[in-house]
Image (cartoon, rainbow over all chains, first blue to last red; front, side, top):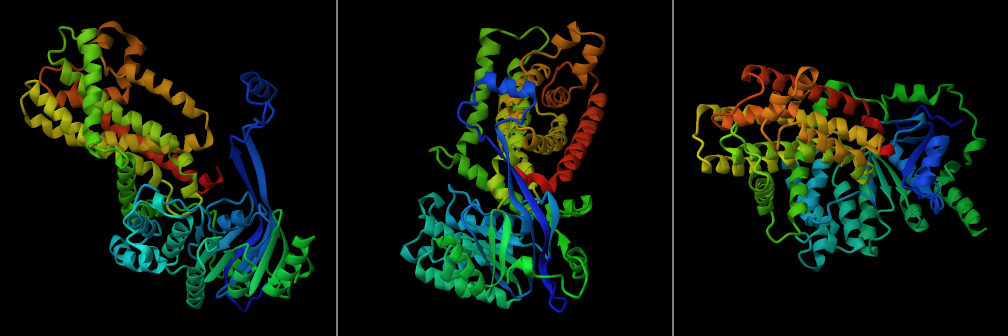
Length: 259
Length: 299
């Protein structure tokens, strides 16, 4: 069971959530012949092309207003899937996810259009977050400025495919951070920025928190989590291993990872 | 503190009650139909910008750019004209202006064809976007229709030049072009929405689409006069062919742009059918897509 603190306002409640997603085209070697496929069809075995991944196996927690929560765990432990479920982008198969307002996920795989210039992607991103065209237009210079992609020349008018991975990650972060969110979910977005940008974005996360939102941060960098989050959740193979003050959780996690 | 060691606190309420008390809503709750429509309306600027961006990025890598929007229908018309008009000489005594007759069919059917294949892929191909951003998913198939409608407007200008160049007069009936395009767009929008959900669940359907499209095209009198049907078919076969929505739209368009076009059914009946098909297909497609709204991220 999860402890409930009735004196505080919750923003995200995850109640025994299970998430299963299907992967198409995950074919094992040697199962690709038409004869093998036909045999599977006749014998009614699950087609090899479709595999089910049970990514989250019953997770419960409550996040409160004004909290910044770090999510740690080894690769493939279900951190990103968990964030997607909180954002309402992946439905839970069992259990439920409740949230106040519309949580927004900011991730490294947020698709922007690579053939279009940065400016236009900023505009598109703002519209996709539900801003009005006038609002979005007014925000563009501010976002470009914050992302700092124009520090080395006029990159904002070049197609995104010419950007380095660090630059596009910065632009993505700048777009999502331009709007006030009740709940902001950040997935490894700061990992590719340089130290100057990292400092600036950590400041922005603190500002967003001050505006009474909740921030979730997935990162493999312990220092980033230590500096921004006072609470952490450690996920391992779809289950919560620890949930509590960052220092305690990171200590446990560190001990586990060194094993 | 490790989660397993925590006992339920003295409050004694479940997480569900706690969520309800503070007005948190379930992420998996389906919005009501009017709420969903309002949401799509609120995202109209995104749909417009996204369609524009898609067109730019499609043509962005070519030297001629958006000129291809006009060149593609011209080339299409030329290919079909050479094969069916010149080589096979399909024109009979029934159709006096075969080039315009053929191009009307090819362009109108082409609109539906790309919408169907684009719609079926629209959810599956944008899974990354769906798993990254929150927006009404119907924006994806609707933007396919918006993109193709823009291409269709380019095709229509080519078509009008062809029609005028082949000696058809401008008449008041040309005003019917707009309501026909409106009905066809609604019909296609329903198809795209329906196909999008179907394609996201049944991935095999994508392999069948080309065959389905080919049968549909031959049944829509695109490449030959509609008299091929009316002269040789009887009973239920004829009724089936005549109820074909694409045949209805193509016939109406030919009728409004050209003189001396023989129709399979009287225009009033065609109009009723055109409006009925648009309404039914749009409602069915929209409701079917909306019912699946929360599951598209699962893949």
